[in-house]
Image 1 (cartoon, rainbow, N blue to C red):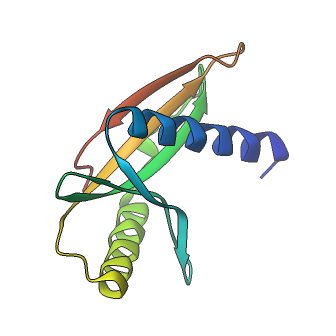
Image 2 (cartoon, rainbow, N blue to C red):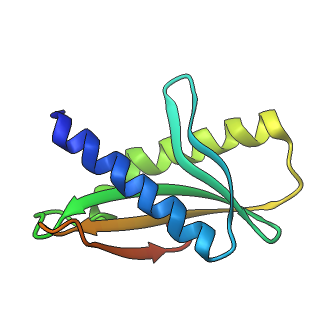
Length: 118
């Protein structure tokens, strides 16, 4: 992966976190890892813990953010969330969401939330 892709991904996560905060979400974790599982953002909104996958794309990318969530990624998200839940034993509902961040050539961002992706 080239450095530009890493930079775009980090910018996308920054933008997604700020977007969630502005809507009343409390950010619990960012880039939470255990073993080979990673969850981009774990956020709480009311009585629900949201496991958020962030996909950042440049404007005009050939694959949509939603299409990049294949069955293997779904399995990884579920297993990561189960590990997190087992460690933290929270009494909350859980939900899996996708935030698609699109960046144009002027560093303007468009954000799209898709809830309940699993």
